[in-house]
Image (cartoon, rainbow, N blue to C red; front, side, top):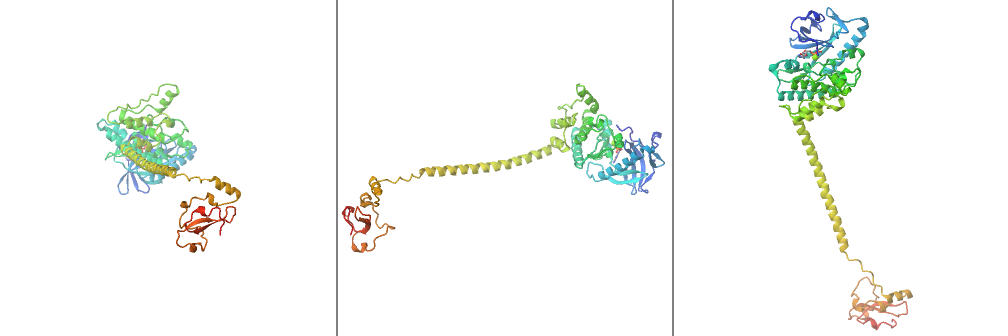
Amino acid sequence: MNSVQAIDGTPDAEFTDVLKPGTTLLHGQFTIDRFLNSGGFGMTYLASDSLERRVVIKECFPASFCSRSDTLVRARSRAKDGEFRSIVKLFVQEARRLAKLKHPNIVGVHQVFEDNETAYMALDLVDGKDLLEILDDDLRKLQPAQIRDILVKLLDAVAFVHDQNILHRDISPDNIILDSKGNPVLIDFGAAREKASKSTRALSALIVVKDGYSPQEFYIAGSEQGRSSDLYALAATFYHLIVGHAPPVSQARLAAVAADEKDPFEPIPLSTVGYNLEFLAALNKALSLFPKDRIQSAQDWLSEIDIEKRREIALQRAQHDKKTEHVISKLVIETNQAVLEALQVEENVSKIPPKPEPKVNPLAAKFADMGIENCPAVKPKETELKEDEPGNPPEPGIEEEIPDQPKRWVFKGALSKRSMKWFWTGEKSRSDYIGKAGP
Ligand SMILES: Nc1ncnc2c1ncn2[C@@H]1O[C@H](COP(=O)(O)OP(=O)(O)O)[C@@H](O)[C@H]1O
Ligand SMILES: [Mg+2]
């Protein structure tokens, strides 16, 4: 926990390093009104800018590496000078990156500047009380609906920070201020680091752990810290708001589990009045001892508890399903149609009578063997001959010879000769010609 609470007026003798009220910074642009707090990374002050607007000033003052002489900040020793300088450099880098984080639930950074041989950032003053003060104040107990609303807003802010690849690393009740409208604002990005950035030895010495809120990996030097580490701390903060005390120190939880003993953490009972089951289950999950068992992202957490969001997701899924359903039913209809058509074609094909096998007249076959084709003896009966059948070349002149007789094709020729022919002639039976030689 932060060792020092806000102090009104002149700081205690113990805090001789604190800037005195009336001290000006950045050529008179800011005036210190009073000291607020001292953390591992520096001092926090209430101040006014040149337009007499109230701001909060954070001074890079890692007390284990530096001290003050008059207003100037100096390394405690020559040996610590290098480390102190690199901390100041990092403070400026981080402050510049934080200045770009514009979100209604994240404290706004006005300005980043260097003075007194150290660095400063000027922040929006959030008019309200931090959650630790609220927890201490029995008269201002938060209602379940408020708690839920605060968590949803903070999850949105944490998701935003994580999206910029930054971890807060110090989420706790004293780093969340409820403004006059009940809106939560996340403050104190002093321990925040870009996820990828390697902390120097000096910085690791400044790493804060807050018993009850910090996940177990924060106690182990060099261990992997991720989004779920911030989510653990956020869940621990809300555990405190709901249950009335912080969860057990995560280091003790880890030690118990390592010794094959029961994890001393008691999950929030799912029957707790005022909260729905999903809300409490998600909180318990985020408080899992090992990162892999926790909720992995603020977005995942939001979609687990935010009814609106869940409704939205369910709706999107339903719309997607509907679309898929439509596509599938269209496909089914088309397939059915195709199958039906194929069946009909098959049926029609089966209805077509098979082509009759040409009847082989044994006599014709015999003549054919002999090399005689179109023998009148094997030709169909005369009645079967078609009148005026086009296509069969008539012998010119025959027609005129027998003008008043119905015309038809008749055979003329000798059986034994290949010269047998059909002629267009009158109504004489085919037998008239059989056996007679042609003209
Ligand atoms: N922007 C702010 N507006 C109002 N109060 C603030 C603001 N920043 C910090 N404080 C108050 O000062 C306290 C200490 O500030 P914080 O940034 O948490 O530094 P640290 O915890 O490192 O000392 C907070 O718990 C809060 O009560
Ligand atoms: Mg703090």
